[in-house]
Length: 357
Image 1 (cartoon, rainbow, N blue to C red):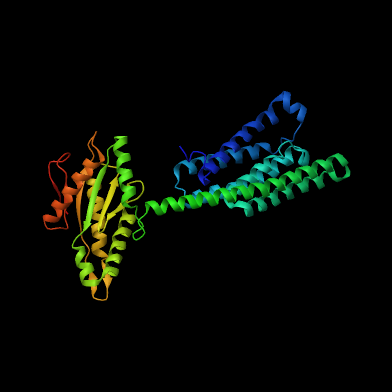
Image 2 (cartoon, helix red, strand yellow; image 1 turned 60 degrees about the vertical axis):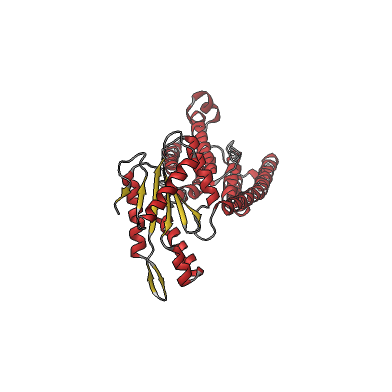
């Protein structure tokens, strides 16, 4: 709730998309509602084309915003490209509605603010310049400079445009810097510096949150087999490299949609998977084990095999976070006692207590 009013890029684009729909709907009575259109008498020849292009673009943007991850190419093209579309639509709309005297001139201010949220002061000034050029073109085209009142209105609109570009850019830059620093501090407090996975503190918080929600999930505790040997025979630097290798495998094969992975402590790791399906859990484990077998850590002495032991517990409704962690921990030590490089599955949800590797 405390971050509800933080303007992220996604929230910014969502708001901008809603504003586009608002202005598109607003244009319909302006051009086609007889009591209004008969008074304004705006050009309507090319408006249907603009309207159709707007519908297609904004519908596509809505799909991308709700279906595509923020890191995807489509997402970046549609969000950044939205500002280009806005500038073109802005110039087109001003052409149809009176040029420099158009009631839609203030829309240019919104486009400048939109650019500021993405590219801070530089973006605001660039788009502010584009909006000023569009406004100036229509002012000169319509010979507004020959009329004192029109010249004064043009001057005031230009001043407001540049003030919004500069002030909006400064505010956006400051807000983004604050947001970036806040995220960095939060990340540092939740992330393990060596492996890049979430740390023990974040793990405890997430398990507690999952049990409070009382939604099904699977907790996996895993441990690098005979890790002490790596440190004793090859040194702690090699041991650290092995930890990084395992962490990288987890990040590669456990997506955010599937769950999260953590460094529990030392050579021990944890996963919280958004499923209780044994086949899915087994599939993830097999992929990671196969990857570590195919790409072991390579040192001057050759390949160093890396294997893991797993304790797997499925959440039971009403269970406390400490209880499921304890069950997974006991199962992990059973797997290690059984010879390592093995999995032990809890008896609460399954008849068998071992997954075949």
